[in-house]
Image 1 (spheres, rainbow, N blue to C red):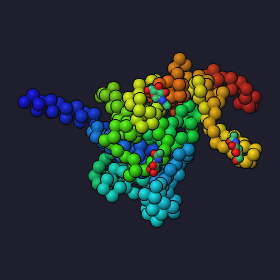
Image 2: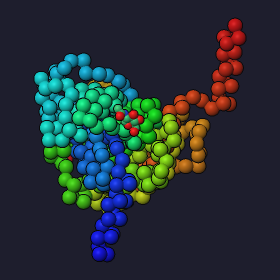
Image 3: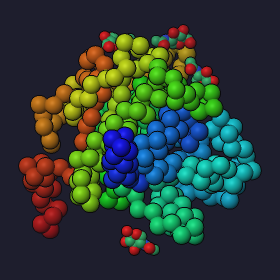
Image 4: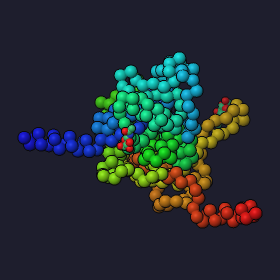
Length: 329
Ligand SMILES: *[C@@H]1O[C@H](CO)[C@@H](O)[C@H](O)[C@H]1NC(C)=O
Ligand SMILES: *[C@@H]1O[C@H](CO)[C@@H](O)[C@H](O)[C@H]1NC(C)=O
Ligand SMILES: *[C@@H]1O[C@H](CO)[C@@H](O)[C@H](O)[C@H]1NC(C)=O
Ligand SMILES: *[C@@H]1O[C@H](CO)[C@@H](O)[C@H](O)[C@H]1NC(C)=O
Protein backbone atom coordinates (compact mmCIF):
# COMPACT_ATOMS: atom_id res chain seq x y z
CA UNK A 1 0.00 0.00 0.00
CA UNK A 2 2.82 2.32 0.98
CA UNK A 3 4.54 1.38 -2.26
CA UNK A 4 1.47 2.03 -4.38
CA UNK A 5 0.96 5.48 -2.84
CA UNK A 6 4.50 6.64 -3.51
CA UNK A 7 4.39 5.25 -7.04
CA UNK A 8 1.23 7.23 -7.73
CA UNK A 9 2.80 10.39 -6.31
CA UNK A 10 5.86 9.88 -8.46
CA UNK A 11 3.71 9.55 -11.58
CA UNK A 12 1.92 12.82 -10.79
CA UNK A 13 5.20 14.65 -10.20
CA UNK A 14 6.67 13.34 -13.45
CA UNK A 15 3.58 14.33 -15.43
CA UNK A 16 3.50 17.84 -13.95
CA UNK A 17 7.07 18.37 -15.13
CA UNK A 18 6.58 16.91 -18.61
CA UNK A 19 7.26 19.68 -21.12
CA UNK A 20 7.67 19.98 -24.87
CA UNK A 21 11.27 20.57 -25.90
CA UNK A 22 12.67 21.38 -29.33
CA UNK A 23 16.28 20.23 -29.58
CA UNK A 24 18.76 21.35 -32.24
CA UNK A 25 22.50 21.84 -32.76
CA UNK A 26 25.14 22.71 -35.33
CA UNK A 27 27.17 19.49 -35.32
CA UNK A 28 24.38 17.66 -37.10
CA UNK A 29 21.46 15.42 -36.19
CA UNK A 30 23.65 12.28 -36.19
CA UNK A 31 26.24 13.51 -33.69
CA UNK A 32 26.54 11.82 -30.32
CA UNK A 33 25.92 14.74 -27.95
CA UNK A 34 22.51 15.62 -29.37
CA UNK A 35 21.35 11.99 -29.49
CA UNK A 36 22.41 11.38 -25.88
CA UNK A 37 20.55 14.52 -24.82
CA UNK A 38 17.46 13.52 -26.78
CA UNK A 39 17.23 10.17 -24.99
CA UNK A 40 17.95 11.53 -21.51
CA UNK A 41 15.39 14.35 -21.82
CA UNK A 42 12.89 11.79 -23.06
CA UNK A 43 13.67 9.43 -20.16
CA UNK A 44 13.02 12.37 -17.82
CA UNK A 45 9.46 12.41 -19.15
CA UNK A 46 9.63 15.25 -21.68
CA UNK A 47 8.15 15.28 -25.16
CA UNK A 48 11.28 15.94 -27.21
CA UNK A 49 11.65 16.83 -30.90
CA UNK A 50 15.17 16.66 -32.30
CA UNK A 51 15.37 18.78 -35.47
CA UNK A 52 18.87 19.58 -36.70
CA UNK A 53 21.04 20.02 -39.80
CA UNK A 54 21.84 16.97 -41.92
CA UNK A 55 25.45 18.14 -42.20
CA UNK A 56 28.13 19.67 -39.98
CA UNK A 57 27.26 23.38 -39.66
CA UNK A 58 29.70 24.54 -36.97
CA UNK A 59 30.68 28.18 -37.29
CA UNK A 60 27.63 29.14 -39.34
CA UNK A 61 26.37 31.46 -36.59
CA UNK A 62 22.88 32.77 -37.25
CA UNK A 63 23.09 32.21 -41.04
CA UNK A 64 19.69 31.17 -42.31
CA UNK A 65 19.07 29.06 -45.39
CA UNK A 66 16.38 26.77 -46.70
CA UNK A 67 16.67 23.54 -48.69
CA UNK A 68 16.87 24.69 -52.30
CA UNK A 69 16.13 21.33 -53.86
CA UNK A 70 13.94 18.41 -52.80
CA UNK A 71 16.92 16.05 -52.61
CA UNK A 72 20.46 16.18 -51.21
CA UNK A 73 23.32 16.87 -53.63
CA UNK A 74 25.92 15.42 -51.26
CA UNK A 75 25.97 12.89 -48.43
CA UNK A 76 24.95 14.13 -44.99
CA UNK A 77 27.31 14.03 -42.01
CA UNK A 78 28.98 10.62 -41.49
CA UNK A 79 27.29 9.43 -44.71
CA UNK A 80 24.26 8.63 -42.56
CA UNK A 81 21.90 10.17 -45.11
CA UNK A 82 23.05 9.66 -48.69
CA UNK A 83 23.11 12.05 -51.63
CA UNK A 84 19.84 11.73 -53.53
CA UNK A 85 17.80 11.23 -50.36
CA UNK A 86 15.07 13.79 -49.54
CA UNK A 87 16.38 17.13 -48.20
CA UNK A 88 14.41 16.62 -45.00
CA UNK A 89 13.08 13.60 -43.20
CA UNK A 90 12.98 11.67 -39.95
CA UNK A 91 14.37 8.45 -38.51
CA UNK A 92 12.39 5.49 -39.87
CA UNK A 93 11.56 4.23 -36.40
CA UNK A 94 11.20 7.59 -34.61
CA UNK A 95 9.39 10.57 -36.10
CA UNK A 96 10.58 12.81 -33.27
CA UNK A 97 14.10 12.81 -34.79
CA UNK A 98 14.42 14.98 -37.92
CA UNK A 99 17.11 16.26 -40.25
CA UNK A 100 16.93 19.14 -42.70
CA UNK A 101 19.36 20.50 -45.26
CA UNK A 102 19.60 23.84 -43.49
CA UNK A 103 21.56 25.78 -40.91
CA UNK A 104 20.99 25.50 -37.15
CA UNK A 105 18.87 28.69 -37.17
CA UNK A 106 16.79 27.47 -40.10
CA UNK A 107 16.37 24.05 -38.44
CA UNK A 108 14.48 25.82 -35.67
CA UNK A 109 12.26 27.49 -38.29
CA UNK A 110 11.83 24.17 -40.14
CA UNK A 111 10.52 22.58 -36.94
CA UNK A 112 8.14 25.44 -36.20
CA UNK A 113 6.99 26.07 -39.76
CA UNK A 114 6.88 22.55 -41.16
CA UNK A 115 7.36 19.67 -38.73
CA UNK A 116 4.75 20.85 -36.20
CA UNK A 117 2.13 22.65 -38.33
CA UNK A 118 2.21 20.18 -41.25
CA UNK A 119 3.56 16.80 -40.25
CA UNK A 120 2.25 16.58 -36.68
CA UNK A 121 -0.89 18.65 -37.26
CA UNK A 122 -1.89 16.13 -39.96
CA UNK A 123 -1.63 13.43 -37.31
CA UNK A 124 -3.98 15.50 -35.12
CA UNK A 125 -1.22 16.64 -32.76
CA UNK A 126 -1.05 20.31 -31.77
CA UNK A 127 2.46 20.95 -30.51
CA UNK A 128 3.39 23.96 -28.37
CA UNK A 129 7.09 24.30 -27.54
CA UNK A 130 7.97 25.18 -23.92
CA UNK A 131 11.73 25.36 -24.35
CA UNK A 132 14.32 25.24 -27.11
CA UNK A 133 17.60 23.52 -26.29
CA UNK A 134 20.63 23.64 -28.59
CA UNK A 135 23.62 21.32 -28.34
CA UNK A 136 25.47 20.23 -26.45
CA UNK A 137 27.91 21.61 -28.97
CA UNK A 138 31.10 19.65 -29.67
CA UNK A 139 33.49 22.23 -28.25
CA UNK A 140 32.95 25.23 -26.01
CA UNK A 141 31.34 28.53 -27.08
CA UNK A 142 32.54 31.21 -24.69
CA UNK A 143 32.40 35.02 -24.83
CA UNK A 144 30.65 37.06 -27.54
CA UNK A 145 33.67 36.23 -29.72
CA UNK A 146 32.25 32.73 -30.21
CA UNK A 147 28.64 33.47 -29.33
CA UNK A 148 28.30 35.23 -32.69
CA UNK A 149 30.21 32.54 -34.63
CA UNK A 150 28.61 29.41 -33.23
CA UNK A 151 25.79 27.75 -35.14
CA UNK A 152 24.53 26.28 -31.88
CA UNK A 153 24.19 29.83 -30.56
CA UNK A 154 22.57 30.81 -33.88
CA UNK A 155 19.81 28.24 -33.29
CA UNK A 156 19.47 29.53 -29.74
CA UNK A 157 19.12 33.24 -30.46
CA UNK A 158 16.88 32.57 -33.44
CA UNK A 159 14.54 30.76 -31.01
CA UNK A 160 14.83 33.64 -28.51
CA UNK A 161 13.92 36.12 -31.30
CA UNK A 162 10.71 34.15 -31.80
CA UNK A 163 9.80 34.48 -28.13
CA UNK A 164 10.88 31.03 -26.95
CA UNK A 165 13.01 30.52 -23.86
CA UNK A 166 16.18 28.88 -25.19
CA UNK A 167 19.41 27.46 -23.83
CA UNK A 168 22.64 26.74 -25.64
CA UNK A 169 24.84 24.00 -24.17
CA UNK A 170 28.43 23.37 -25.21
CA UNK A 171 30.72 20.55 -24.17
CA UNK A 172 34.49 20.26 -23.96
CA UNK A 173 34.38 17.08 -26.08
CA UNK A 174 35.26 18.52 -29.47
CA UNK A 175 35.54 15.31 -31.47
CA UNK A 176 32.86 15.22 -34.16
CA UNK A 177 31.51 11.79 -33.28
CA UNK A 178 28.77 9.69 -34.88
CA UNK A 179 26.17 8.41 -32.43
CA UNK A 180 26.45 4.91 -33.89
CA UNK A 181 30.13 4.90 -32.84
CA UNK A 182 29.95 6.65 -29.49
CA UNK A 183 26.46 6.77 -27.96
CA UNK A 184 26.44 4.79 -24.72
CA UNK A 185 23.89 5.91 -22.16
CA UNK A 186 25.01 3.20 -19.72
CA UNK A 187 28.63 4.37 -19.76
CA UNK A 188 28.96 6.74 -16.81
CA UNK A 189 32.29 8.09 -18.11
CA UNK A 190 31.15 8.87 -21.65
CA UNK A 191 31.19 12.71 -21.83
CA UNK A 192 28.08 12.92 -24.03
CA UNK A 193 26.13 10.92 -21.45
CA UNK A 194 27.37 13.06 -18.55
CA UNK A 195 26.52 16.26 -20.45
CA UNK A 196 23.06 14.93 -21.34
CA UNK A 197 22.35 14.25 -17.67
CA UNK A 198 23.51 17.76 -16.75
CA UNK A 199 21.19 19.22 -19.42
CA UNK A 200 18.30 17.31 -17.81
CA UNK A 201 19.28 18.62 -14.37
CA UNK A 202 19.28 22.26 -15.50
CA UNK A 203 16.16 22.01 -17.65
CA UNK A 204 14.21 20.32 -14.86
CA UNK A 205 15.35 22.97 -12.40
CA UNK A 206 14.04 25.70 -14.72
CA UNK A 207 10.70 23.96 -15.14
CA UNK A 208 10.41 23.41 -11.41
CA UNK A 209 11.08 27.11 -10.74
CA UNK A 210 8.66 28.06 -13.50
CA UNK A 211 5.84 26.33 -11.59
CA UNK A 212 2.48 27.55 -12.86
CA UNK A 213 3.95 30.48 -14.81
CA UNK A 214 3.37 30.38 -18.55
CA UNK A 215 7.04 30.65 -19.45
CA UNK A 216 10.39 30.01 -17.89
CA UNK A 217 13.05 32.59 -18.91
CA UNK A 218 11.93 36.21 -19.52
CA UNK A 219 10.97 37.21 -23.08
CA UNK A 220 14.08 37.94 -25.15
CA UNK A 221 16.43 36.15 -22.76
CA UNK A 222 18.45 32.98 -23.29
CA UNK A 223 21.20 31.08 -21.53
CA UNK A 224 24.68 30.09 -22.66
CA UNK A 225 26.07 27.09 -20.78
CA UNK A 226 29.58 25.60 -21.16
CA UNK A 227 30.64 22.28 -19.66
CA UNK A 228 34.23 21.45 -18.63
CA UNK A 229 36.11 18.26 -19.58
CA UNK A 230 34.41 15.33 -17.83
CA UNK A 231 34.50 11.53 -17.81
CA UNK A 232 37.04 10.07 -20.23
CA UNK A 233 38.34 13.61 -20.87
CA UNK A 234 39.03 14.13 -17.15
CA UNK A 235 38.08 11.29 -14.84
CA UNK A 236 38.40 13.46 -11.74
CA UNK A 237 35.59 15.72 -12.97
CA UNK A 238 32.24 13.95 -13.23
CA UNK A 239 29.81 16.29 -11.50
CA UNK A 240 30.99 19.85 -12.18
CA UNK A 241 29.64 22.66 -10.04
CA UNK A 242 27.32 25.22 -11.65
CA UNK A 243 28.73 28.76 -11.66
CA UNK A 244 26.79 31.86 -12.71
CA UNK A 245 28.92 33.86 -15.16
CA UNK A 246 28.86 36.64 -17.75
CA UNK A 247 29.70 36.53 -21.46
CA UNK A 248 32.37 39.21 -21.44
CA UNK A 249 35.32 39.50 -19.08
CA UNK A 250 38.76 38.15 -18.36
CA UNK A 251 40.32 35.90 -21.03
CA UNK A 252 37.36 36.35 -23.38
CA UNK A 253 38.42 35.80 -26.97
CA UNK A 254 37.38 35.34 -30.56
CA UNK A 255 38.43 33.67 -33.78
CA UNK A 256 41.73 34.92 -35.15
CA UNK A 257 44.35 34.02 -37.75
CA UNK A 258 48.09 34.12 -38.03
CA UNK A 259 50.18 34.44 -41.18
CA UNK A 260 53.04 31.97 -41.55
CA UNK A 261 55.66 33.56 -43.80
CA UNK A 262 57.59 30.33 -44.33
CA UNK A 263 54.61 28.42 -45.67
CA UNK A 264 52.79 31.51 -47.03
CA UNK A 265 49.60 30.28 -45.42
CA UNK A 266 47.26 31.13 -42.56
CA UNK A 267 46.61 29.31 -39.32
CA UNK A 268 43.34 29.61 -37.43
CA UNK A 269 43.95 30.35 -33.77
CA UNK A 270 41.73 32.13 -31.27
CA UNK A 271 43.07 35.10 -29.32
CA UNK A 272 41.92 37.37 -26.52
CA UNK A 273 40.49 40.69 -27.69
CA UNK A 274 40.34 43.93 -25.72
CA UNK A 275 36.70 44.91 -26.22
CA UNK A 276 35.55 41.48 -25.07
CA UNK A 277 36.40 42.44 -21.50
CA UNK A 278 34.00 45.41 -21.30
CA UNK A 279 31.08 45.34 -18.89
CA UNK A 280 28.22 47.59 -20.03
CA UNK A 281 25.26 45.55 -18.83
CA UNK A 282 24.43 43.12 -16.09
CA UNK A 283 26.44 42.18 -13.02
CA UNK A 284 30.06 43.23 -13.55
CA UNK A 285 31.17 41.31 -10.46
CA UNK A 286 30.45 37.97 -12.14
CA UNK A 287 33.39 35.92 -13.47
CA UNK A 288 33.69 35.45 -17.23
CA UNK A 289 32.88 32.11 -18.86
CA UNK A 290 36.51 31.86 -19.97
CA UNK A 291 37.76 32.32 -16.42
CA UNK A 292 35.50 29.55 -15.14
CA UNK A 293 36.20 27.04 -17.91
CA UNK A 294 39.87 27.78 -18.32
CA UNK A 295 41.08 28.59 -14.83
CA UNK A 296 38.69 26.96 -12.34
CA UNK A 297 38.55 23.29 -11.40
CA UNK A 298 35.61 21.28 -12.67
CA UNK A 299 33.01 24.02 -13.16
CA UNK A 300 30.21 24.74 -15.64
CA UNK A 301 29.56 28.35 -16.70
CA UNK A 302 25.99 29.65 -16.97
CA UNK A 303 25.50 33.09 -18.57
CA UNK A 304 22.26 34.87 -19.36
CA UNK A 305 22.04 36.98 -22.51
CA UNK A 306 19.36 39.20 -23.98
CA UNK A 307 18.76 39.94 -27.65
CA UNK A 308 18.42 43.66 -26.97
CA UNK A 309 21.68 44.51 -28.73
CA UNK A 310 21.16 48.25 -28.29
CA UNK A 311 23.69 50.29 -26.36
CA UNK A 312 23.05 51.75 -22.90
CA UNK A 313 21.38 55.16 -22.61
CA UNK A 314 24.69 56.91 -21.86
CA UNK A 315 26.34 55.45 -24.93
CA UNK A 316 23.31 56.12 -27.04
CA UNK A 317 23.52 59.82 -26.06
CA UNK A 318 27.24 59.86 -26.80
CA UNK A 319 26.70 58.43 -30.27
CA UNK A 320 23.75 60.74 -31.09
CA UNK A 321 25.85 63.75 -30.15
CA UNK A 322 28.58 62.61 -32.56
CA UNK A 323 26.07 62.47 -35.36
CA UNK A 324 23.87 65.37 -34.26
CA UNK A 325 24.38 67.48 -37.41
CA UNK A 326 23.02 64.62 -39.51
CA UNK A 327 19.96 64.07 -37.36
CA UNK A 328 19.02 67.75 -37.09
CA UNK A 329 19.34 68.61 -40.78
C1 LIG B 1 -2.94 24.57 -30.30
O1 LIG B 1 -2.72 24.82 -28.93
C2 LIG B 1 -2.55 26.20 -28.63
C3 LIG B 1 -2.15 26.33 -27.17
O2 LIG B 1 -2.76 25.39 -26.38
C4 LIG B 1 -3.84 26.93 -28.97
O3 LIG B 1 -3.68 28.31 -28.71
C5 LIG B 1 -4.16 26.72 -30.46
O4 LIG B 1 -5.40 27.32 -30.77
C6 LIG B 1 -4.21 25.25 -30.79
N1 LIG B 1 -4.32 25.10 -32.24
C7 LIG B 1 -5.13 24.20 -32.79
C8 LIG B 1 -5.10 24.16 -34.29
O5 LIG B 1 -5.87 23.46 -32.16
C1 LIG C 1 35.89 10.74 -33.20
O1 LIG C 1 34.68 10.46 -33.88
C2 LIG C 1 34.76 9.53 -34.95
C3 LIG C 1 33.40 9.47 -35.64
O2 LIG C 1 32.43 8.95 -34.78
C4 LIG C 1 35.21 8.19 -34.41
O3 LIG C 1 35.34 7.28 -35.47
C5 LIG C 1 36.53 8.36 -33.67
O4 LIG C 1 36.87 7.14 -33.06
C6 LIG C 1 36.45 9.45 -32.61
N1 LIG C 1 37.75 9.70 -32.05
C7 LIG C 1 37.96 9.80 -30.74
C8 LIG C 1 39.37 10.13 -30.34
O5 LIG C 1 37.09 9.62 -29.91
C1 LIG D 1 40.70 17.64 -14.18
O1 LIG D 1 39.85 18.07 -13.15
C2 LIG D 1 40.50 18.47 -11.96
C3 LIG D 1 39.45 18.88 -10.95
O2 LIG D 1 38.46 17.94 -10.83
C4 LIG D 1 41.43 19.62 -12.22
O3 LIG D 1 42.16 19.91 -11.03
C5 LIG D 1 42.40 19.27 -13.34
O4 LIG D 1 43.14 20.43 -13.69
C6 LIG D 1 41.63 18.78 -14.56
N1 LIG D 1 42.59 18.33 -15.56
C7 LIG D 1 42.58 18.78 -16.80
C8 LIG D 1 43.62 18.22 -17.71
O5 LIG D 1 41.77 19.58 -17.19
C1 LIG E 1 55.19 27.72 -40.50
O1 LIG E 1 55.23 26.83 -41.60
C2 LIG E 1 56.38 26.02 -41.62
C3 LIG E 1 56.43 25.27 -42.96
O2 LIG E 1 55.22 24.54 -43.17
C4 LIG E 1 56.36 25.10 -40.41
O3 LIG E 1 57.51 24.26 -40.39
C5 LIG E 1 56.31 25.95 -39.15
O4 LIG E 1 56.16 25.12 -38.00
C6 LIG E 1 55.17 26.93 -39.20
N1 LIG E 1 55.25 27.84 -38.07
C7 LIG E 1 54.28 28.01 -37.18
C8 LIG E 1 54.54 28.99 -36.09
O5 LIG E 1 53.22 27.42 -37.26
